[in-house]
Image (cartoon, rainbow, N blue to C red; front, top):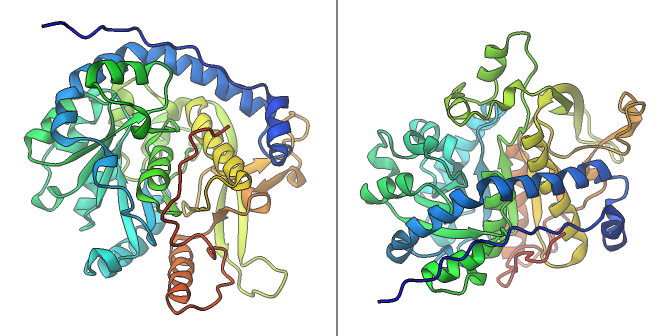
Length: 419
């Protein structure tokens, strides 16, 4: 019997120069900075170079699990039509929304699937914390290729979590996935849009990789947004706990404890990704409802404060903003992204990143001001806005909410050719 040819993945990565991007996306000017764009390019090359061998090995080892569980494209396509996807990250601001999240899930979870308003996806870090709160996620997302997430996903999982489906890349840890499978739980795979991995998948699995590829934006929440659009056809996405930053403390241990909502920083230490030790700073936001809302006045009072972040988190932030922004004006897909984090740096922008202008408060703005698809608001308000739009659509009424025109998008396509 002949063996499949093991090809070494092509890791050549070409990123368009910033000026070419501005010609294609003039809306980027003054929003997505050249320094940020160039940094993403360097980071992409580094990631491909560093992880390609591990990811290639993992794909080869995971092919048997693929045959037992298969792709997200198998039976998840269209699950999110007329539903909003709520994805929960482990950022410290999750605690501001956990009571509202529990209320929404309790009310929605008793409905038949066709009548539900929300799909719930947990990041791997938040899987067990949510179960402990009595929230059973429909899915848990995984993008990490290491074994460090073993306990998060497989350690002492209660019976209530047995029906949660794991959404993971073919490059994820075979040990973790085998244990998940051994416990009798379902897996649905995707393939990251990384140079060379499509050839590895084709050779090892013997299938066309194209239907299974997503733009994986580095972290779980970015990847789940891609999945929600491409496979679920869920055109409304709520991001909760996506801080991408941490509060600055005088003691490094306190800083690490404040990185995640549950204070558990062990997985970062285990993989030597001590992001809370970074010295990069940016402005994070806090948002409170305005006491008086009048025409022409914002419904929220937004305060910006200095927070800490890291180069890795910075890549996740800029990738998300560039893709939400670029595809909002391209017409590829109709969607709305709600940043319900109530903290962090996502969507906090500056017109000019030169050192002498970073201290100018007029230089800063929220992405909402430039992008009609990005909304910064608390989870309770976002959920109310979505359900109102859905109800008006049901009754055939004209909807003046931002969500008008994005529901019932059964043929939504992912942005395979995004910037």
